[in-house]
Length: 276
Length: 252
Image (cartoon, rainbow over all chains, first blue to last red; front, side):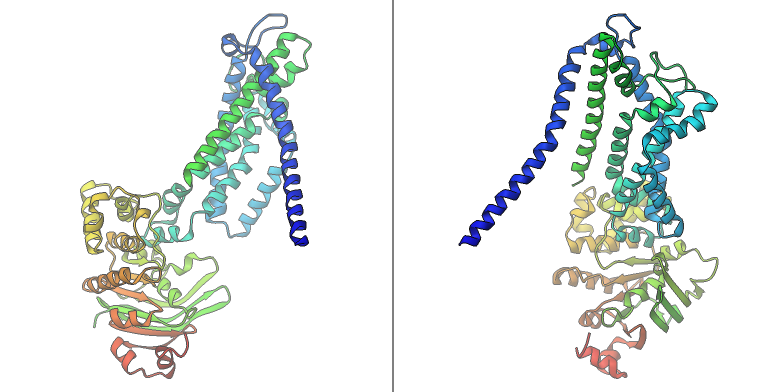
């Protein structure tokens, strides 16, 4: 009987520790969200969403140009990163038993561990130095960050499609590549889209590589060889400025960024849930 | 008898494991040939060698000849994709395409090979489902997911899918092992019906099933063809001691 009590105590103790750990993980998250929402919310009004960055000393202004710029950068990065990541993922899952694929898999692991600022410097050396600080350079850097994420999630998603589904298609006399793009990918479509969305959420908030390769910009989109404004950089630059109006806009930008990433993550979750 | 397959010195490996050893046999057209033998004797590998499905497994290797209508399917210049269109396959576990409707499952082989004409597809779907004795059960809900059917229906759907591309041969790898006795009986009746127009090769570890459905039986043991002949003779009067011991349940 004593032993039984001892086990009950142990069980409660472990449970308590687990909840404590959960709580200590949630406290910083919620306090950060609280702060961002409370401070950001007060700066948000219609002007905030339709006006570009104000000049120093000017009152009001907004982050419309940064929202535009961030969407352009993300879009461009996805245009480069998603096809490459998808194809690599397909290669690793469907043709992935060669020495080449072992090397590719290893390089992707290395790539996903490279600090994002190093990737920014790489984009600077490769693109910024030839065409200047530009949205193209930033999109290139962000695409490189996306590629290993998309590759890995695509590979995992495709591997979950049972082998016997592939065999059924192949035995019908359907060529291998057609089997892959129709039967296999359609079976893993939702998981692949989820992976792409999560990689977009990941790059939406990147600031270091964007700063190095594109720099800060206060105006609207002006061409692919020019910079664009960026929400993450707004937070970085405005927050450190001495102007109250800019500091308020930093909180507003942070809130928009958090909502954007949250929105993408929720969309990804909803898609994953529907799969089951 | 008309010979559909003439198999000469067929050997197969998985990596360094020698799973089929010097198989020589002729398979008759429009008949049911059963492949029996204990687990791991190479039955499945054998049928997979007949439509070049063996080679899609990494590390798998084949040597020897498989003459299909007189042409060696392992010759250089023979496209395995074309081989598989002539020689269909039904697998152990029913494997309808999960994201497709019943209609699309049956039409998949034609659609993915470029057939677009709705009339041709409709006719092929109906003909195949009728042939597979499934039409009456599903004609009202062709748009439903193939995965919503029962196990036995799914297996008949897979047979219909294989038949839709109009193969000459149907290879069946233990098609009833995941099914209950009633569904099994339906598939067995279907196999007899199909033998009127198709060559059927069926792998089974159920000896009674081999006796019920097949015209010829081959007994494989440890990768070797021990005995092959008319089913009646194999079951009533086996020539080889191993065959007799297997059939009487001494091992297996």
